[in-house]
Length: 66
Image (tube, rainbow, N blue to C red; front, side, top):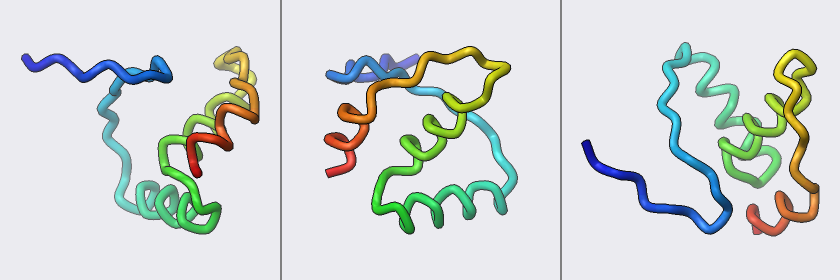
């Protein structure tokens, strides 16, 4: 099993299986927002109260998409 290359931001890889229409909607949203799909998904998940995730600062997210 190969090991993922460490990222400066501390993110780790995760493989998930999604319905094709969900993937397309995620990609469209990312294109509309001029950002990356993983950032869109991360933002959505951080807003889910049941997950109890402390959101990252908006400053760090904006600098990544540039």
